[in-house]
Length: 454
Image 1 (cartoon, rainbow, N blue to C red):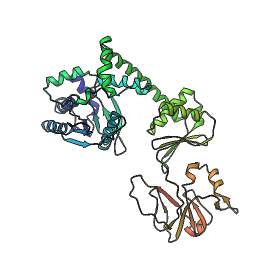
Image 2 (tube, rainbow, N blue to C red):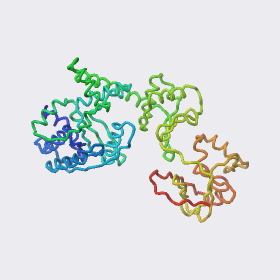
Image 3 (tube, one colour):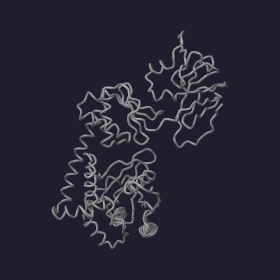
């Protein structure tokens, strides 16, 4: 293994705040932690004005009887290396795909710990890459999935910024790494579950790939070339999608946590470019469709319907069509309510832990807040005749799924405002000439406040 090449490949990351190492206690991560610690103490590192802090992160999945002993081993190794160690324990739900659930829990911890300008190093190697390729091939993955693991990619962090995930051992085989680890007289833990072929990756590792390698000894290098080609193709697809998206009418609404895209801009492209564009747009909002969902989406989009209030539900994300726009809502709407709320308008009014109403200028007046029941009539400013609330919302192109959760503000029995959209004609006499309604979305983790119910 070329240590000099390892050093040079990491030069761009010396400006980082912290180097985190995902440290399981196994051979790969132990060697990686050791190499990084030696690198930061090397002559090569002394040419930099400042060096990142090196920290290890051990995640105890609590799936094996030896998990507590592995924790102790990791602590001893990090103490010997003088590297701070953070240990996080996670609970993996029973049932389902244990491998996938453990990975989700692990990456959630990474996101919680990382900050902007941090780098997360993981010890994946060439054999892991080979397993990933065949695992995704067996599951029918496309170009992006078969591109397998990237050597480097952006990674979300808890402060809403972006850290970097790096796999510096990805081009080295397990055999090469084992030789270096043994030469350094490292000790590591062995997870007995790695031999259990009930897990898909272990089945590939122990049953399938050895047969391929006996027939084609250069399999790992060949697949590495294929992955490189696929990653290049995926990069081209991504760049094309970025260019196409820049020409589209896209909108975002922070209160509703909703994004939309004009379908006319999507379908002015070829069929394949349209699909590539929409996949990219959905991925920007952390939404990925499986083959069945993808097929359902395209059938709906090509049915020439101008409105489809509900299309697909994927986790907490909803896809809907309205006015020839595709909407992606990233959080559920509140449960409909027929309750009435009293609002002392010199204070803010929280409603069902979902929204909060306030005025730009506090007024000492008592208002009432209700929700749409049907048949409401409104008198718009500078108009002499009433108009139905239904027609006003339709003409304003308010999506149908928003209309029933828009708060209606009354003074006595008189409707004076439609959410933060319209101050009606009677409002100025009650609230003042320049006052306005402010509607704020309460976050999902907002502490529940008592409702001001009548």
